[in-house]
Length: 315
Image (tube, rainbow, N blue to C red):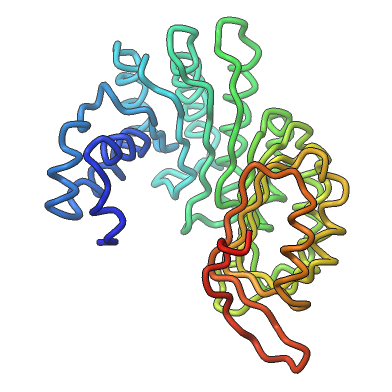
């Protein structure tokens, strides 16, 4: 268990637990005796802010019954997991059942009597790309039908862990929900040579405010694969990058259209190929509310790489 988690006060542990899906909260609570001691007071299902939903018929039925109860007024976010299901959603009947159940859950969860204003769509790790297409078709249908109703809260959509191939299914089946997407987290790797699917998704997300692009491979990726998509949304307010080598000139070119709006920059596991000081000089010219830097490296003129000690101290 990370020592920083153990040092959290009971109030902060309780806040973390309330903002996790219930299953994840239980796992977190049982991870350590001290965490359990500090967080057990928050473990009341009436206080949970995140309501998890899986597109499995039994799971959807249970979720629909739970959300009818009075405790749903505590919900802040509906967390839709696009995990593998036992009965494939490419079959017409299971797909019809899933979308109608999900619609009823969203309609109740976003009722004005609640404080819920966010739908999170989380792409699972083990689901095949073909399955994602049918998953997102169900979700898009339910969101479109929900947003057509007047008696629901205004809400925003956040997409997590989407890959480049999965963007194709989102373009084909999820166009109707892209107007409500506020945040996208994209995973890329060295096999993603054609980023056109990401570009097409971002060009249709007219209200995007937060963009995260992560490379989880051990090797750094050249920023050429992402620099052309960063500036697609001119009113972007928050940018997170991880796992890339980049020059200050490339970053500046990518941000030139969003500079008036960008307020938060989060860089982790990054190499600056033209030195770290040039990045600091550039970042100081922007009107940012928050900058976070972790695991930052620089490359010298001879090609050597050096880790920047305490990069946050340079700000």
